[in-house]
Length: 148
Image: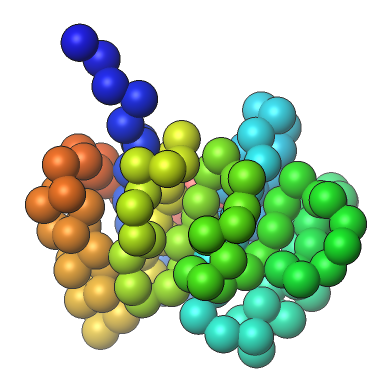
């Protein structure tokens, strides 16, 4: 019997010049174009501000309607923290935090972005194992030099 389990995807950047923030914007844009709401989880308010600024100009020539958590508008893309997961209606979670998303089965999709630098990948390995141990089947996708 099919379960309504969360689909977990790890997007592994291979080019160190590529930014996980730009990839997050690209994936949020794709979710929005499919009619899905998303929450981009960041570790702190400085990262939220940086991502907010980037979403005004990336992808280039496009507008991604978004809000930083705590604002009253209801944009299809929100930027927030792990603490915001408890009261989000987002269908897609894009995680830029070092910690795994608690209770991922609440969401339709969970997208984990893995930085290209080897030194930055350990947290992603821990998250991959945590999701697998919770009964999910995470998939990995290599984001090559020519993607995005």
